[in-house]
Length: 320
Image (cartoon, rainbow, N blue to C red; front, side, top):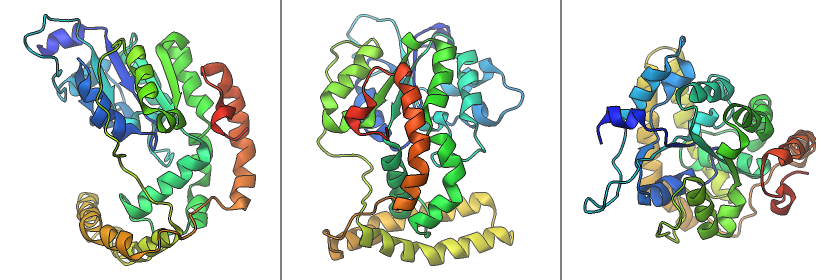
């Protein structure tokens, strides 16, 4: 379909994350099976950073990244829907203030006022553990302990993980009937039922989706594994940070080197660690001092959130 025709269609369905809530599963196994144009992991820095902001320009930037529908060519033409999936539309994973998710929400509404918005959340403490483990093992140069990481990131994570704040914005902008909030824990418990909820919300009905039993982007919580990975990360991270601070390398070069390092870890280091380390090592957990500090904040947010969602957060053991 011609891009101008796509721009005239009201049928936009936008998945904004959060991070660490099965985004890769949705992007690889669910969204490609839909009879829909797909814009998966697009570059959305314009909506986050541009000042002033032009909705028409942002829509054009997105549509330049569209992937065609999987609908067979011998089927009659159907109303076209476009699925956009990008978890950074909910802000940065660690809550960094360089991207304001509330401003992004307003700009999404300016661009797609009739869109439906899918938001997947996760128990806040599990989110923190998963984010930290991912940064240590798979996609980060994290060498700090979890306690040090939380000391550095606590303020922004406190804000990031009060889900009611951002979800409340989306409800006020788009209307509650156009917002679907699902718990990641429901996906883990019954993936097929979770996917059917998404399909119903995306107006796809009983469209068949073949689900693989293989999990996507799994990060370990094995304490020994994480400790060893931190020690391996430290020399490279310190060296790269020093080169960047001394302006010997650019930010672009830093990102390139880090990406190459991630590849080496994935191919060589992580398989070796998985083979050598004791799988029964105690799992990492949030230190009790941090739980006692953060729990009241998350509990208050989750209680406010109950009026905005259609499931029982206590059922999934969210801080309450």
